[in-house]
Image (tube, rainbow, N blue to C red; front, side):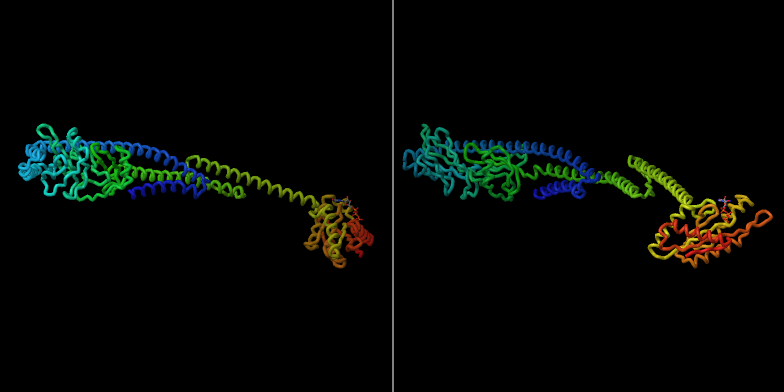
Length: 569
Ligand SMILES: Nc1nc2c(ncn2[C@@H]2O[C@H](COP(=O)(O)OP(=O)(O)OP(=O)(O)O)[C@@H](O)[C@H]2O)c(=O)[nH]1
């Protein structure tokens, strides 16, 4: 039973732990663990509930059946005992009514010395002969009315202590039974039956006491064919076993006090207790009405409930396995939902982080597969839109760059325009103030350009302007600036340059321009430039001041005959 109990408790603990593990491990936050817990509970509660309910009912039914059978056993034993006693009483009555007994007691009663001397021996032999024929009787003793033993079948008659009221009882009831007890002399459980011996004229002369061997009753306690299974015992008032139906060799202990008291307190009611063989039994007691004798019927509990317990354990194992299977299926189902969802979540996170190169391939045809497909389409559309936006952005940036360039470029020559020139000059002036490193400014003007225009036309004039711009760009460093100031005037800013170096650059430009020849029909155009050069000074408070000084220098160059560079410090 201890083993079965432990299996049962293990299963209960297992089922509880199995249902708790996912919830403990995952804190019931994920869909997966929620599904597992739900499926486990949905399986565990109805199957365990229904199963246990059924088993409770079947246990109650089994209990009722066993109780009924045990009652049948005690009833049967009680009836058999009564029959047996009746038969023994009858045998005692017949013996008591025999002439030998009556005459012997008559002699004693009449105090006839001759008879008294003759009868005891003869009576004893008679009693021995009768007792020898009756299996259930161990001793027959004849007593006179005052309780004195007249004769006995036994050498040492056990005698009997007859109750004080015996003479009356014996006449009226005809029978006195002493409580059964363990008889050391005969080494068996016995009880004594005393029947009155009456004279022929119905006067009580004495009694015949028969000592009955209860072992003789033992085969009658249970019917081998009709009695239900179980063992029957007769107990004395202290709970000691007098006889029982147990097979020979089975050792029997005394019933423990509390169990005995409880059994006696509820006669006919079954209960579980440690039986006489120290095994767990279900049993009930009945009290014999004639005298203090308890009839105990019991059955081995394992034998009664063995099948039931096995079935219950099977149910628990089945439920445990069912829970495991369902939990595993739910876990798998949860996984099949959660894993693709996690894939989708990771992909969504990557998109949220700006990585649009996410592609999921939908391998399933269910809702998740549909969701994955839609997600892929959305990501595709997002990629296309993003590419379009990026292309538009790039185009816009290019346009902006072009616009920016146009806004600072002279369209005819490709040099910086006047606006940009103003900004560059302001910047250089500020830089000079910061670093005290001067820059130089060259102002150029094509000589007699009006005449050239007038002679060869404006288009040729434009081409000459572009050629001069080209020479300017080729003549300066990459850090320097060249701009068209307006009409046929150009400005060059030489960064971190003193006037001496500036004059050299101006001279180089002048020479290049002078050497320039441009074909125009049959003739060739040659041009010259006049250049005014200045170095910025600390008293140049504005860009206009620098321009003004450069303009003056140019004017001086023109005035000096053109095709020359003039500088002022
Ligand atoms: N082809 C062409 N001519 C221009 C352009 N802008 C201005 N001009 C002309 O350039 C001429 C400039 O003449 P000026 O600088 O005043 O006089 P000049 O003939 O060069 O004489 P000096 O400068 O004194 O040597 C004018 O006739 C303008 O019409 C232009 O973009 N293209």
